[in-house]
Image (cartoon, rainbow, N blue to C red; front, side, top):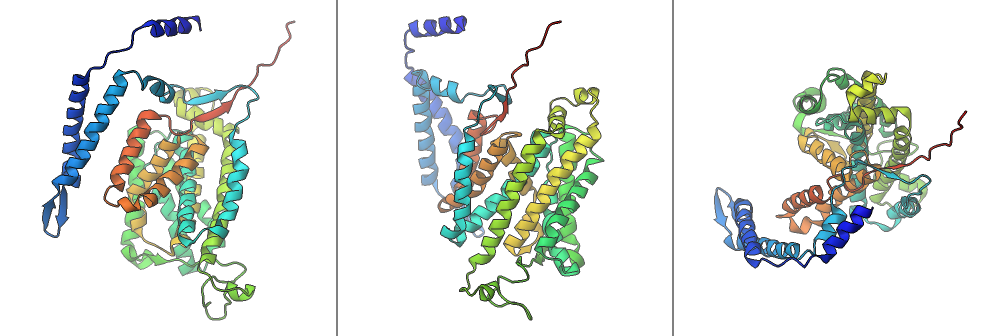
Length: 437
């Protein structure tokens, strides 16, 4: 502490750094050249059928914006204005934030408010907002499941979308060949996806890092290719229809099937297309809350501590007597079961399934949710899932640039918050006073 005070006094006694406009201008020119190289082929060339048109004006505007931003940034950095900001948002080497013993998280005051807003949402939101929130909750489930595998157990899984597809096609195939509905397939899909996760876990028990990523990536592609090429069963690229959920046998369509009764007629209310999405939203919200509670409990149980021990050092984990086989298989199975449940909700929300919805891009997006939210952080994953699903909708008016803006957002996040939005938080324990004999 004394050293820090002396250093602080020494810094205060130093004269202010002098500005170097020439150096700042050189940085701006270099940044402008890089922007010209990056934006030129993307923004400056517009395809028009078999030909193309050049748009040098748009490239010039973006390049000037980058140069002005870089010039301003360099001058502020030389003046020392950005140093307090950099110290505040700088990276911390500690992956886990340990609070003082007995500390209470401020998030506990927000949870009742968020829950009340979530319960009131179906009554005030229109169909578009409701569908966007449903999609966000689906990605929350996917992020929570992958967070167990990658964030807690440290197993890099690039084929996570395969379990997502198992759940979605489980509902479609169960309805078409077995006559099963949404409510009966929901628990079965979790069991089926968990079994698939355990089967995948056996061949990769001795693999780590890049090798594990390659094998899991191959698993995801195998699932997609089977769904795409098994035409007699899965319908191939054309996909399969998925039924809407029912409540006590009542359907949500304007006209029910032969012998059925629409739910709006049974309740004596006017028909509304939002009824289906309200039921899906309610069931999905309850499922997300249940998964959040289970994950919260698991991370504080011995199995959760074993996952974290496996992530930090597998050799030390095995030396402590932990069965690394069961630890890995449990992480794969529980994470895959969550993806299977999310797949059922996605299928009934969309009304049909096809292999194009389960590409590698989906696995990369789910992994981005885990990394940006914070490895192992539940709150961070929830926030990142909504950010990465709602942001494209908010940027829909910038259709030509929203992917570029999305990439810039991710780069800035990795620079300023390399540990993610919210780091893992632990409550410290106060040492017990012992008795000396």
